Amino acid sequence: MSKITTATLLKMKQEGQKFTAITAYDASFAKLFDDEGAHVLLIGDSLGMVLQGGDDTLAVNMDEMVYHTRCVARGAEKSLVIADLPFMSYATPEQTYQNAARLMAAGARMVKMEGGEWLCDSIRHLTRNGVPVCGHLGLTPQSVHVFGGFKVQGRDEFQAQEIYRQALALQEAGIQLLVLECVPVSLAERITKALRIPVIGIGAGPVTDGQILVMHDAFGITSGYVPKFTKNFLIQGGDLRGAVRLYIKEVAEGTFPGPEHCFN
Image 1 (cartoon, rainbow, N blue to C red):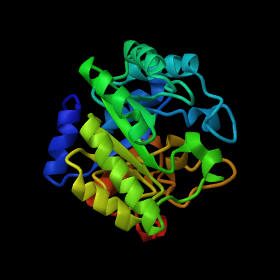
Image 2 (image 1 turned 30 degrees about the vertical axis):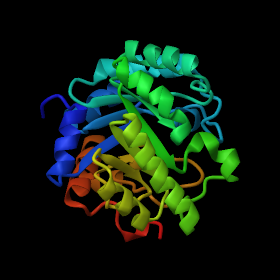
Image 3 (image 1 turned 120 degrees about the vertical axis):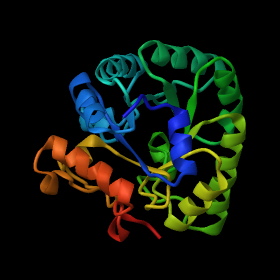
Image 4 (image 1 turned 60 degrees about the horizontal axis):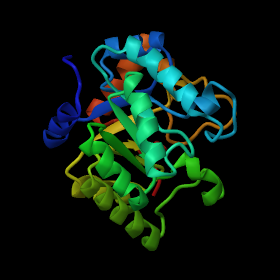
């Protein structure tokens, strides 16, 4: 596999090929995922839950994201490395630019932000200054308390239309990827077909251009609540490398996620 770029993922979308993303937080796992052919590695603020044991992602700060981004970048040779901007690190344009620059300097090749069209001015400025942006709509974990918990988004027609509209607005502002989390399959399909850019799903069904999982979920080592959209690939894969290969294979074939992992 040659070095993955946003152009690679766009070509895969245009050719109908599914790509695979997974979270990573250190150099060792980054290298393992990279070696096995994962297209995208995301340093997610999910580290606040799976590494730090929190109930949500809100306590993660910029210093922690920079540290983990630097670690992952050292282990990734070919995969596209994306880093989350954590909670309240992009509340103002100036703050956004400074913190995005820190993540890029640490080795990220793209930053991810949760939210809708209120981000558009910042996205335009970042892309003009050489910082690629990945958007994130649907269930945005940094807004969990606004939603009243980790709940599926876009089930009623008004909310679905709003998410669709926001996706188009983010694309026009300049995002090059979009993550859709915990939305009905019908909405994910509508957005994926409407956008020129690749769409990555998590709890959005098999209709998106790519899939992403938190690595701990893919290995079945999540403690407590296990989300419906996850699958333990370690059971069939036999070992860590086998699990990653199986995950990539099932995404490419369109067999993961299956009906049991989807929301209607």
